[in-house]
Length: 368
Image 1 (cartoon, one colour):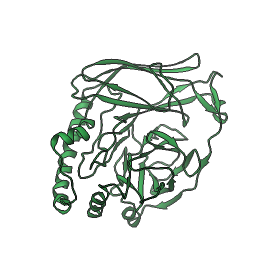
Image 2: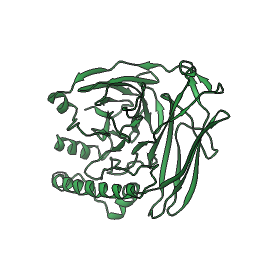
Image 3: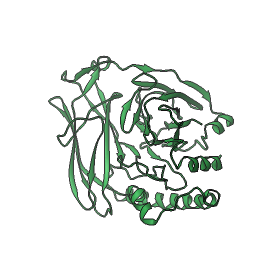
Image 4: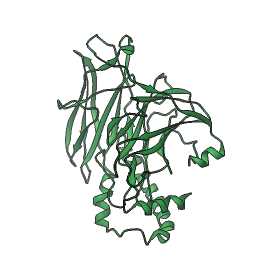
């Protein structure tokens, strides 16, 4: 069975991700750039509601899979999964400027009341081109992260020296978009194959800059457009486990795991995109937070049409058990009614040789 990465592209201001199995809770992490305490209350309510639903589901499946399910103590749960599910930071004193060929975005993070450290990872794109970020003067990378201890205040500065392909260097205005990822260092361990709130991705609006000629030139990106578009019928919904797709502003992954056959080093998955507003998106694929190729290309371009499902089959080489995979999509024609940036839910590569593989397969069969 191939797993499916689903990206719902709908007209909404914020994208949230979540993925769950019978051992984890799923829900919406707080907006990493929010400055209101309302975000904490909303997050708490969402986690409590989803936790109750997950517990109910767990009760129905526990007896059927009890012989396969390892016993874990509350301490094990908290250490392996629980402490990565909550946490909050107020982000205030935000600023943004483009000066002397450098984009600088800065803000102050306050973590009053947290029980555990909380981590935020950052990515950035200019007109759909991935950028390298320097965090507080550090080495530029496509993803940087900062860990914030409880009850502290810390200033965070993200610097970018724009890298642009020749086709966009002549644009009069460029759109700069940041993606924040909640607790990106989390890796499923033991029987926990889901992510819950960990790896939730949130877009931080967009800023506009006028190029001044100092931007670095990079090679054009090789792009694949080999996807298919099908009408979303009842049969298609069932085949791809789409469920109720009327929800707005939600990104999900239909299968929490991508199977890896014993003795093999490549896996297959489908990138699925749908939404209620037509547009074309540039899609990037990441393995363990590092950008990888999509069928031999740097990225994919996929058009979203209302009432249709866009399907791109992908073969991922050089994977190992417990690798993590996700996709990020950016609209090419960015208008007011188009969501500006989306991250799919993260998926776990799970080998048939992994002791937990059989248990996960049984759970998936019960859900069908």
